[in-house]
Length: 265
Ligand SMILES: Cc1cc2nc3c(=O)[nH]c(=O)nc-3n(C[C@H](O)[C@H](O)[C@H](O)COP(=O)(O)OP(=O)(O)OC[C@H]3O[C@@H](n4cnc5c(N)ncnc54)[C@H](O)[C@@H]3O)c2cc1C
Image 1 (tube, rainbow, N blue to C red):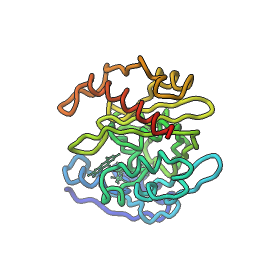
Image 2: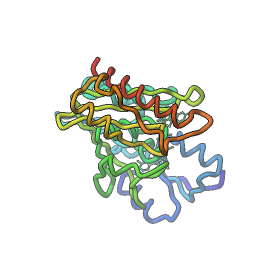
Image 3: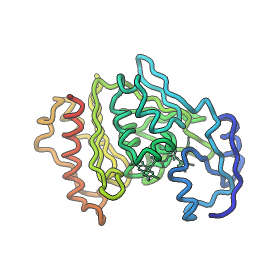
Image 4: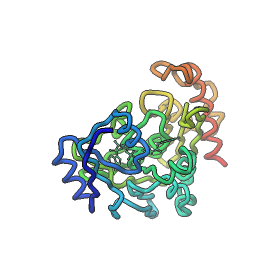
C-alpha cells in the first residue's frame, strides 16, 4: 500500500469540495472494497476522504411514496430496519444476503452502488425498483446510473448522498450464490408497480441490466406461469470458470421465477 493523506470530512459540502479540488482523492465509506484494492495497489489515491462522520449521509426515512436511504447506511441497518421490512421487504431481504456479518456491519449502500460490482446485490434491487440516486449535484435514475462493469454515471467531484426507493405493490429478489464467494452467480429482482413490472439481473453480465421481454410478460400476468416459454439470451453473458454463459442464462430464468414466487408469498 502506498502512502496517502487521510481526511475525515465534516459535511457533504466539505467532502465534495475536497474531492473536486484534488486530482486523485477517493471517498472512503465502509472500505470493504476500497481497502483491499489499496492493499493490492489496484488504486493509489493521494487522499482518502472518510465519510463516516457525515450525519446527513446516514439513516432511513419512509413516507407514503417510498424510502430515502442515506449513502452511508450500512447493509446491516437496512436489513434490520422494521419500517423497511414492512414497506419494501425486498430491500432488507437483499441486504441480509450480502457477504457476512462483518461486511454487512461496515459496507454501505452508497459504496455498493458507486462500486457497481457486476455481481453485487444492491444494483439489481435499485434497478429493479427503479430507484433514484441522489448525488451532491443531481438526481440520476437507476436506469441511467449503472453504465458498465465497475462504472457509473458519477462524474468528477460527484458523490452519492441518498437513494430514493419507490414502494412497489410487490417485489422479490432471488439469488443463486457463487459457492466460493457468495456473490451472485445470478440474481434477479422483480418488482410490480401500477405502471408495470421491472426485472433486473445481476451477476450474469458485465453490469446489471433489465429483461424487457420478461417485464412485458409479467406486466400482462404476474405469475410464474407467465414466464413459460421465455428464455434469457446467453449472448454477451459472462462465460468463465464459475459458470458458462448458457448456464447463467438458464439461471436467469430460474431466479426470475423464484423472485416472482417470493413476491407472491
Ligand atoms: C468478503 C466480502 C464479501 C462481500 N460479499 C458481497 C455480496 O455477497 N454481495 C454484494 O453485493 N457485495 C458484497 N461485498 C461488497 C460490500 O457489500 C460493499 O458494499 C462494497 O464493498 C462497497 O461498499 P463500501 O461501503 O465498503 O465502500 P468502499 O469500499 O468504502 O468504497 C467502494 C467504492 O465506492 C466509492 N464510494 C463509496 N461511497 C461513495 C459515495 N457515497 N459516493 C460515491 N462514491 C462512493 C469509493 O470511493 C470506492 O471507489 C462483499 C465484500 C467483501 C469484502
